[in-house]
Length: 244
Image (cartoon, rainbow, N blue to C red; front, side, top):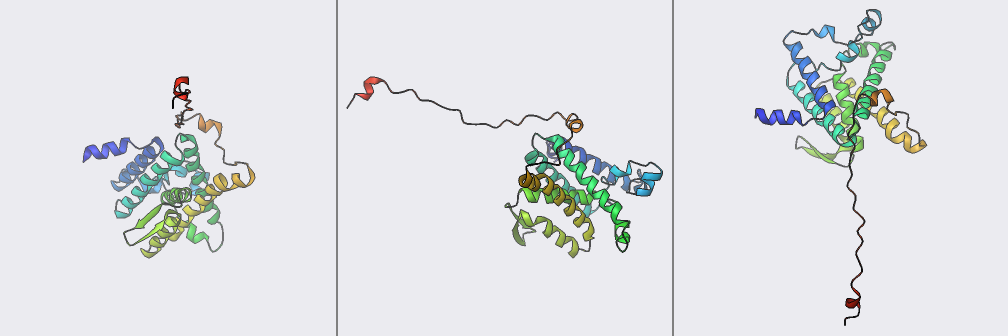
C-alpha cells in the first residue's frame, strides 16, 4: 500500500506534486498547531500596511481542518491539476504555472474589490482562503477543454464533463456549503478559458501569452509527436510485369 502511494506521488508532474505537497503540509501543520491559520489568511490591510505579502500565496495552501471535506478537495486538486498538466499543458509547464498565477490574481482581485462594494462586502469579507476556489477553477478549465467526456455522479446519474462545475456547485448548495467559493472559481476559470481559447479564435490575438521570465524558470521537455514516414515502394521487376 505504501509503495503504491509513493509511486502515485512520484508520478505526479512537477507543478501538481509541488502544490499538493504544500497544501497537505500546510493543512497538517495547522491541524497540529505548528502553524497558525491567522498567519495565512488573506487580509488586504495586513498585506498593504504591514507588508505581509506571503498571505497572497499562503491563503491558497490551507484547506481548513483535516476531515472528509479536506480529502474531497485533495482528490479534486490532485486529479484535475494532474489531468491539466499532463494533457492540455503537456510540455508547457510554464504555461500551466502562468494559468495558476492568472487564476490566483483574478480571485484575489475579486475578493479585494468585492470587499469594498456595499451590500456585498460582508459576503466577501468571509472569504479569507481561496484554495478551494483555485481548485474549482482547474475543474472548470478542464471541463471546458474536455466537454464530451461522460461522467457519473455517485452512480446516481450520468452527464458530460461540460456540466461538471454545475453539478459540483449544486452538490455544494445541497450540503450547505457556501456557493460563493465555487462561483469565484468558475468566474476565474471562465476568464482564463475565454482569454486563452475563445478570444484568440475570434481575433487571432493571444492576450495571455506567458512572459519570458516565467518560461526561463522551467525547462519544458519537447513533446514528440510520431508521424507516419513517407514510404515509397520500389516498382516490381520488369519480368514480373510481362508475366501472364
